[in-house]
Image 1 (cartoon, rainbow, N blue to C red):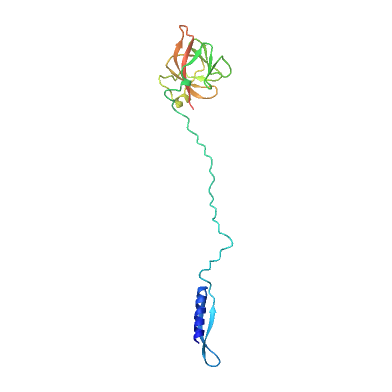
Image 2: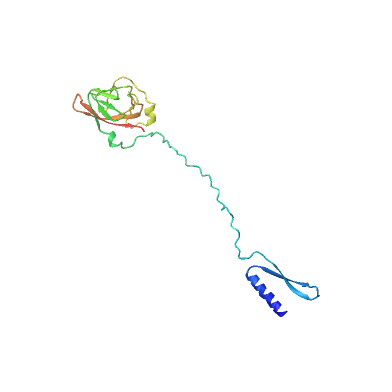
Length: 198
């Protein structure tokens, strides 16, 4: 009997080490002798890893809106820079030459020029361009003022240091100011500054 108990104890220790549980229950045999029988019930081992699912769960992709191109349209400038950039100052126009406000070119009268210095001290408006002789000032005009200026289609006498609004023959708005006459009387040309509002 002692061997049987040692054997059961040894078997129980081995079973515990293997992760099973052993339950010993007393039963009676046919002779009335109480004997120890062992009923072992296997329990899932404590160290057994949990079953790995066959599919790895994936994160649901978030719907991120794609970037939309945004175009910012700036408001037209209302005031000219002060001082004007060098490219818009000190322009020389000699008698008989024509000036294109849109590209800043001096040429002979053609289908693109805006003002023609037809003769000494006289502007002639060309190809639908308009120059205002009514709304002159000693200070640079604003874009709004030049947009709403009154225009006279006739030739205009040139006066120095007076700002005159214009609408170019391509529809741009700006101003011109004659800074000086060239040569003696009669004058051979003029020097002027101008600006086109962007």
